[in-house]
Picture 1 (cartoon, rainbow, N blue to C red):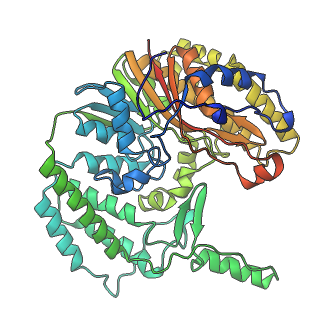
Picture 2: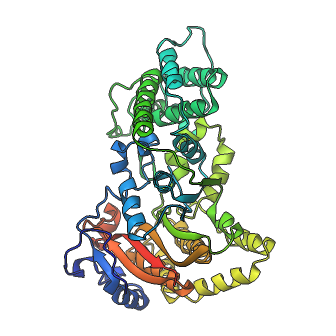
Picture 3: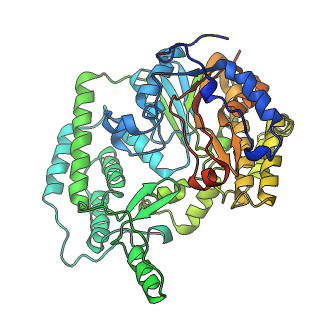
Length: 501
């Protein structure tokens, strides 16, 4: 195997990161998973320089440009820079990110004169990418004039228009804040400023919504402050029905007004723009962003065009982006009905996702690629590890160990859809191109699912050569419910690296 030096490594045993029991109480079959673990543990490297900050948004909080959209599921610019260096990606090469999110991969490439292609279906991504890629085009005097004008704005006493909301976000803001959001949005839309500056204001408003609301993003859902209408109504209902009060843990304290938050955001991005324009030079590299699902869009691209792929797909962890980003989606005019459709279009990672295979097949047939579809399906259907996992989860469900049968559909759909992504990436990559995926392993009903090794096995069956699986030294725990019933099993968080021969 080729030796990479992506991180500061020191020789150490991988025994603590190796799973020795995939099925709690030896309930289900695990021979396929065990065999795969023993095979791929040989290419796993536990890094001293690889931590949760580098594979999350944490480092980007203080990173010029990349902090413009607080996208908690993203990874750091530092990680992308390391991977580009290790993959020997040069100026004018092309790198793809099929799950672009806040655009870290694309923007790091742009700053290094590397062409990029990115896909995402969340509308915040389009706004963030446009704002960031325009960094050399902004007129700082215009932005400073805009900031000065906002300082002198105030909400008219008779203003009664309110921001849009959906069922999930009803009551998310104090009464005055609801009006303030609508007022500043109308002002921005009608202002005299350039399109890119208006888009920047929109991004800054998006970045302010959580701060000025009674909500906080928390994994699978939004948490609510005890002062919100939702919590007050719930408390009153419980009181009237003789139930004990809820234990409310969220108290956001004094929340800023939108005007205060918007000015903070604009001043911060203005400083970033000034620094970048002063210390860097614009270049002609191409940043292509496509608003759509990579599952359907990748098959439309020409073959052999990529020098590398750096990405992090949604994890198979039941997190619903349409709920955690409901404030942002509602602000952008996404209705309840559109949110339901959007939830189904996302990569299957929640219990509400329905199978997409019929739509995938229709897309391949429409593109004249039915043979490709059948070949990929054959890989999925003949994979012994996936078959073992699906069978074990089915038996766990029958045994009452899984509280939502949607987990079975989610896990099956997750690997099915990712296999199609992997196959398209193989077709799109040039010989010698490397692919990096950041992902988390998961556990459901006492059954460990090694996403890193299973994905690597599927990639190898497609044609990729496994290179390395980099694992965090810090491992992830399980839910309290699973630990109480099945005990604790440490789970890896990894970067899988493959190469097209």
